[in-house]
Amino acid sequence: MEISDLPKDKKIILFDGVCNLCDSSVQFVIKHDKKDVFRFVQLQSELGVKIISHLNIDSSKVDSTILYEPGKAYYYKSDVAFKILKEINSIHRCLLVFSIFPKAVLNFIYDYVAKNRYKWFGKKESCMIPTSELQSKFLA
Image 1: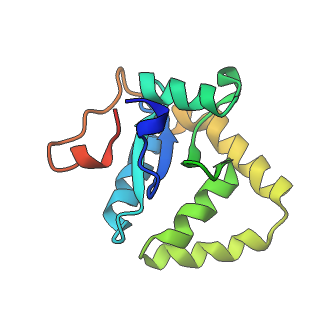
Image 2 (image 1 turned 90 degrees about the vertical axis):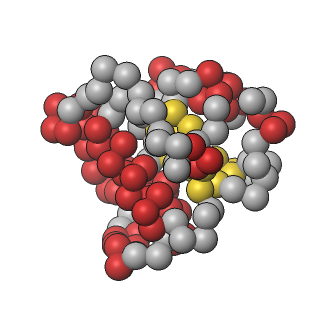
């Protein structure tokens, strides 16, 4: 798939495909994405690398999740969590109250968790392979 082939009406979550925390987060979003807003791309995939390059992001500085709205904008760190929470149908939307805190504080916490995510949550040997039911949610 090429950048020009990305769905313009979907928000694309680029995630670390070997991170257990990221995998759990993707499963959470899929479960609560009742409006079918999101698609997923593993950072390690060929398409993930193309998107990161297209956005002129230094891949050595990508430490976890990016939210990309094709043709519009991209978000990282704590902004990703809040943008996703605004779109899902879940009691977890109450966590949006934390968006009142300064972005520097939120990003400090985000960076701390991202830095320790493998130690705390573990790491897989390879990226997850979606089931046939979920295949349409993942872009390749």
